[in-house]
Length: 85
Image (cartoon, rainbow, N blue to C red):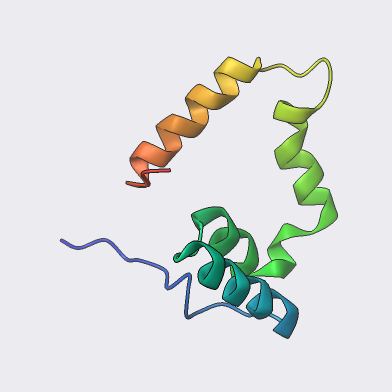
């Protein structure tokens, strides 16, 4: 049974300026970093409210997770996604 993969590079609903960011990143680095692909895939999904919620745990003072815990969780998720980042 094969897993469904989202076409992060070719799919999505990116406005022209995000396509430009992707083009510049690919030319400068030789590849598209996965965070850029994920965040630009569907910009409407990353509304300010969601960004604040997602980033709250790792960037705010008094967060429930330490920086080490957040890094460990990020490594765990990257491993699940077979992302060598």
